[in-house]
Image (cartoon, rainbow, N blue to C red; front, side):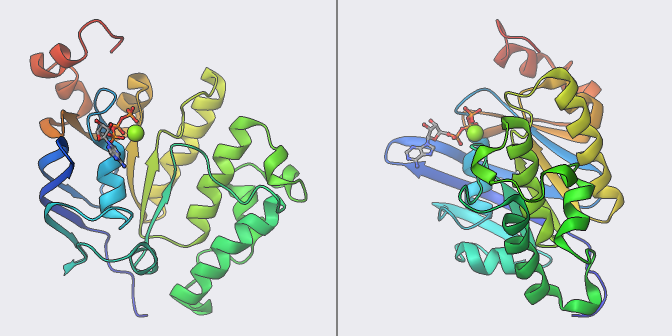
Length: 246
Ligand SMILES: Nc1ncnc2c1ncn2[C@@H]1O[C@H](COP(=O)(O)OP(=O)(O)OP(=O)(O)O)[C@@H](O)[C@H]1O
Ligand SMILES: [Mg+2]
């Protein structure tokens, strides 16, 4: 457990089919620590499937996932988590019967095992709760949290594991404008701490304001990539969003 290795995820020609449904049809992308990478695309375009394959929840039908120079394609989720890739889920996940603090403690213990006490970013679960703005919720039962706080808790558990790369699947879905703004401020801090961040969300205003780069998926294929102002003016991208709000 020496110095910190920069987070570099390289996805090459990644494919995933569910029977006849091709969810990913040969995607290439790279995610580093140079700011937030946004992944956008219409419903069903393969965004969550991409996260599921990277984190080992699903095995790809083809292609490779390389993490910090090592081929991790098809490894099980616990092995990939241990290598420093953490995620939050589209359906906010927690251990509903445990307290907020106990939930974060689970991630925290995982991080302690992974990084060893001397390389820790966090000293205690409470430090993480305060970082994500849940300090007042410490002893509350996770299952009783309001929706916005439950999302923050999902992020707190992931961040507690001391990941080098954090994958966030629609963290702003269902949040008010004000909650979204607060969440954006939180997410923007992760890269400054040396964490790589891949963010999926449908809120284009949010994505344009905090992502350094955007990748656009449509029917499992990458149709555009670049800085948000360029990508969101790309005629191919406008076409796939035709009729919906961009
Ligand atoms: N476990 C599964 N079994 C069968 N089909 C699946 C499975 N997971 C995803 N799919 C299909 O793969 C395609 C891509 O789904 P995915 O959930 O990755 O899309 P998404 O871009 O995350 O969409 P959304 O924006 O609605 O979350 C869809 O056609 C979906 O129905
Ligand atoms: Mg999804």
